[in-house]
Image (tube, rainbow, N blue to C red; front, side, top):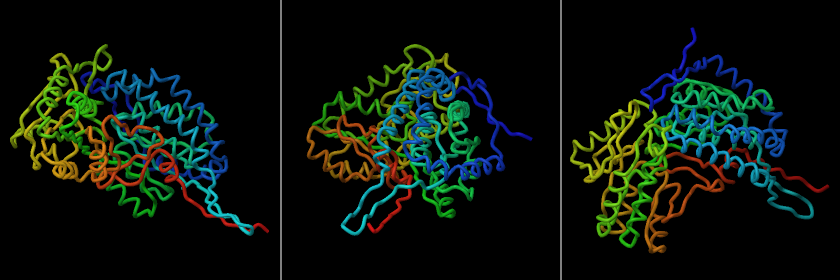
Length: 461
């Protein structure tokens, strides 16, 4: 008997949108077998041959951006303009990939003399199992799928059970073009299906974005399979604001990075540390920004924040907030949810008086909750920033660039941004340290990580 995932609208009282059949173990195995059969012909097309087949898919993503965005907003509760921006921005990343991959993956001559030529060829690793999260359902599918395909790895994709309709839309476009059979396949279901996919004997590479707990489990599976894994997992990014910063700009930067996508971003600012000399004006501006926030239906004009992705996510966030309040934290600023909204909505909250024993400090908060603390010295700021099991990203805000660079070098994170700097360029490698993951995505580093370097040396006679 078939099992189905029911898709609901978290911003519309959990109204049913549709359903998708859960992939059986036999179906997962078949998709992996198809991908393995496609390995050699896909590899032999070469980078430019593969790009030629993938370009029309990129173009259709752009052409269907409106329709894809509507599905994203229905399933995630994010404002429609944000969903539309998700489609277009990730399509731009594909364009960068197409323009730069031929050079990045070209053979590299390491030595040449009168008698010999030595080169490194960047060959595909094989079949990639790609498992993606729900916060940017279209974007993460793009990030996991297209670099692998360009590198020559056939892909079997599993999107989150929270957005199966986005997954179906992605699959429909991928398979409506001239990709060879087996080069791309998709399976559906929860963590059990993801586990089944990762344990298939025909998988050569595991690519995962999601929680640290799930990522660590998958890493153990990859070790048992003796295959490489690229893991981008949770984060608890600190932002450090020093006393010489512009208070208004600093508050706006913290606000934008904490409350984007309703706090459901792995790289969001999740802990703000502000020098005690500037804390008052920064928190005052944060309070104003939070209280001015417009929470509403994701399809309504003017909505800045919709719902969380699910009732489950809202319950986790409420548990973290209740824990903080029970241990002495105080609500400094709050924007309540309008009473006429029904679904996984959650207030926007800034907390003061946060201590290390609270969940909002030592857990990842995937919700619009911002803990704010103060510091006195540079040494204390670095210690607070590193007081976490996570190491995905961080931001340092200071007019003293020499100090900012020094502090950035001491923060244990995969990326550090200074002042208004942004990591989000497709040529920048991205990934985390500690429990935030291993390996890197994007840019030349990320592309080559999806390949197997092969040294070829030959004589000239």
